[in-house]
Image 1 (cartoon, helix red, strand yellow):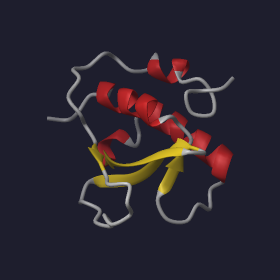
Image 2 (cartoon, rainbow, N blue to C red):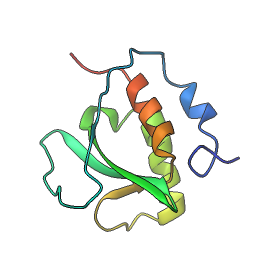
Image 3 (cartoon, rainbow, N blue to C red):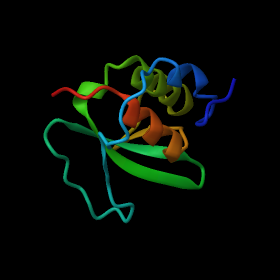
Image 4 (spheres, helix red, strand yellow):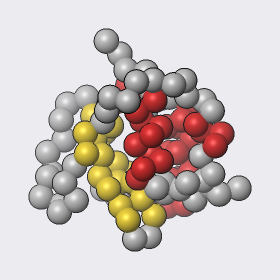
Length: 106
């Protein structure tokens, strides 16, 4: 079963309740010049083969079932000994949709 990443995100999307469309992530520049990691965020590289985008994901999202599922895909694809930024094999637009639907702490 392939997601919008490597397998189909339909089961991941169903774990998320609809939220407003405001962004709960920060997109990093893809030129590699942005090496700063803000406190409370985890840098991730999202994409497959050709198209990749860097995101700063709030740490509070890391334990959400949708993100855990994506991290498991990442471990399956790249192994547990990734160096540098975590890579998630997901289409950036799909990842953005999932992140935008996650509940944000107030």
